[in-house]
Length: 76
Image (cartoon, rainbow, N blue to C red; front, side, top):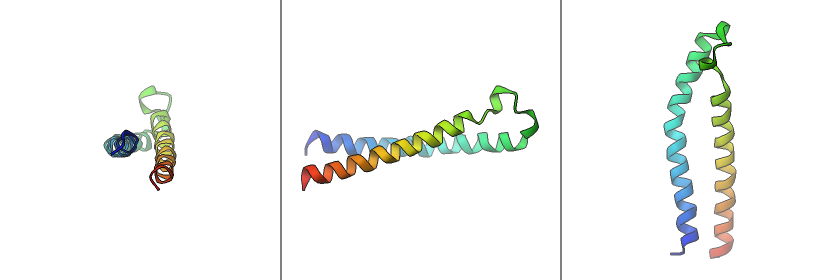
């Protein structure tokens, strides 16, 4: 098998595992933010990590789709 295929599969699998493990942390942060809505000036309760996680998930999905389509064009 070509190294490009291994890179594609590795990127998708490792990215998915990282997103699943980070999802639990983001859910806890979201619950904490919802509980303490009135004290949003504290940096610990900032929604910025959740927004970055969402953007990272979207970017990972777009790159994964691009790699899958590209690998079909290379191996077809």
